[in-house]
Length: 320
Image 1 (cartoon, helix red, strand yellow):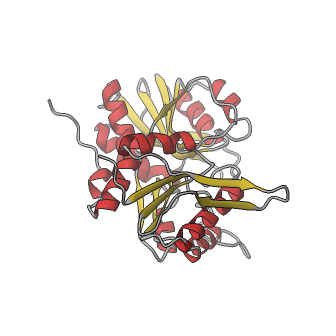
Image 2: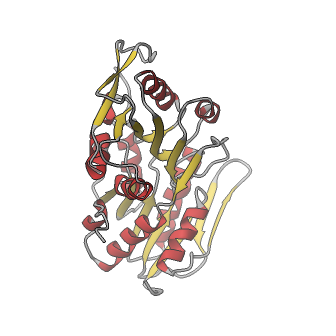
Image 3: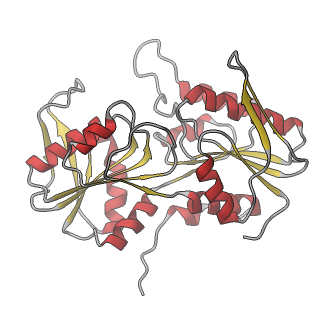
């Protein structure tokens, strides 16, 4: 799209490279801002150009350092509201705290709801995010939330690689990922399988495959790649069950702790993630990044122009 003077894009500290790609796609320069942290840890953030009566989009993943990035976002939202914007939307490629979406044990908080309440209280009008860990987090907000899915991006990538059809099995590395695996499998016209375990104590012992992966190419799929234990354990189970080749894909590559070392020592030959998260953690040698910039940029354009975002939720194979 051509530069739209009624839209402003601002990149905060978490992922300026992705923000720049989004700006390049939209042909809109990133807005000038000040963001700094004082010696005692307090954060100051504000625009250095007029945002009066503009639609402002603030790009910020709430990844490591989670709390600093979250506060920087809330402070920038408040600054924009006080500067008389028309609307302020948060583009949150990775939404931290989304895993704390329920009371899993006595006296535990629902932190995702706390985060949602505070963002709305700061003055936020809309959220655009990518592959929430739990889709019900959308309901924690009293404002519109557009949760884009990454599966169409992954389907296009694997289609171009020729990884599709009956020779490929899409595997959920845990029971909670069945819906995601089924979605990718439908795009690739491939069967699915599930890694299950005989115990429920998270030790990940005695794993077995529900489904057939013998002599097949396997794609493990999850939303968050954090410590990599889920993927590496599932890869070992798939290999023991006779998988010929093993690939892994995740929406958000956090690569915490010893994730890189575990993945490098595994039988996974390629790890595909989006660029939703930027950090200095060690990365596995076989990682490949798939940019979500156009996906997010298209959604920003549609939101600004009052057009539906729903066409972005599907991928149509090129029949030519």
